[in-house]
Length: 164
Image (cartoon, rainbow, N blue to C red; front, side):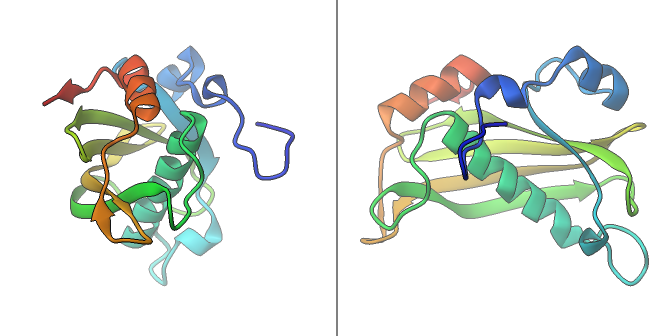
């Protein structure tokens, strides 16, 4: 990771390596990942990861993804993703201190919106996935904004999403 305060490093810091693919059974189409351990705060009273933790992990990954691809950090005058729709499937539960890998990718883009897919992997494979539709909004005005050309180009280079 970057040694500058608050920096998120470079794209190579988040690459799905051969080691991660083997350990977590991650298919080739995924290229952006954050490995971690399940933390105590992620678990609920039944000693498994609460459903909301997955969505928090995906939100954190999305913020890092945007920043690493060169999009400015969230600010009132900068277009940022606002969720319009999400779908998720919980395949298998996780518990405290389990090694996991969280992946994310953009699968389609339009002028002001994009669809991202996320997955959480443990050493048995995928245990959760989510598809989320976002619209880029300038928070200061509440108006839709086009995906900036630099961000669009970086996403295309990384994930090769469908475009319309």
